[in-house]
Image (cartoon, rainbow, N blue to C red; front, side, top):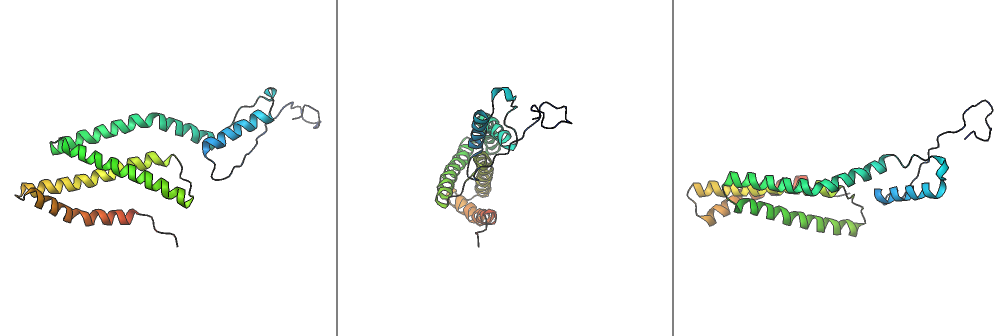
Length: 190
């Protein structure tokens, strides 16, 4: 500030101050924002005309708030669309229930095992990855269930009994699905 007249050639009576704050890498964005707001409250007076805390961290916190507030509706619409599409394709209520049940079990197991593994390895996992993981699992698992159901339907149409149709579908698609899973899995660290 030049309110004390320290810079005689300057007619400016005020200026802008930018303060950069650094936190440990394992601090969540929400906690970083809270710390920055606490810093402002402790170190600046009400007469300082503080604009506020800006930057990517407050933007990410707001983004997460928006995503999390609309996510339940988006998930519900997605599940309803998956249910309707599979029900219409297979002309059955059991097929979409099976696909969604398998996707639900896969999601719960992945989130639980992944969370436990991340805690055990002491690896921070950003909270915003959960909706992405749920969407990917829903899509991938639903696809795989549809592969199996389509193969069973094809086998039944060719005259095979239920058990033989299920065995052939499993034998046909399990290697493909296992290979897809193996290629998508991250490479172990060396």
